[in-house]
Image (tube, helix red, strand yellow):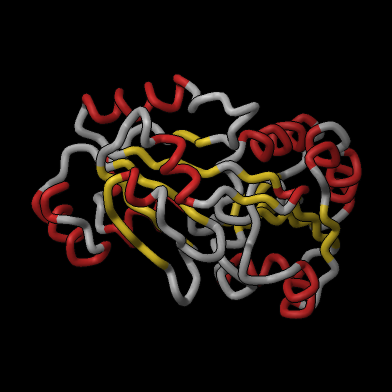
Length: 251
């Protein structure tokens, strides 16, 4: 059995009760933290809290060399840990399909996602979000990719909000901050943006303003998200003003 367990958004306590039970009863535990990570804890704290030993795999160790994970799952109860929800990344879907090719039973125990948290913390309605996008780190001072701008504009034309994930270079310890992301977008789309910082933590931060103003802000420790609202329902306008200090003239 190969069980994919979502760890949730922040620390060793963010996992569901079902996920915790599966983790603690596993014969062997693997994890990856290159697609995302829990910024409120460490591997050692996860191991101590749950009483397990965790084998962390890098990208190549999951995508190109999955044999140790699959071999373990063929002979015993194996858990694969992921921050957030296990099936947000196509990497994990690929691993699940490989398990099925080996006639290994799989199970998914979901965790809270960044998208769910973004809607909850901002007051923006979940069904009014369109296609999400990722804002990459600048490469040789090149402007924001056209595909990012097109996704946001396409959503806005349909009255939908856009959730922007911010680039992560986990191996380098680099996590894009919301002010950097806003600064990359402002020359193309200087409208209302909403910063969500440290979702799932005891002290999440939600701030709304014009992108050029957010680009001058400082929002503390990672992880950050950036939301570009589309057409706002009156309750969403009220929520952004009350929960994110959005300037009324931008709503």
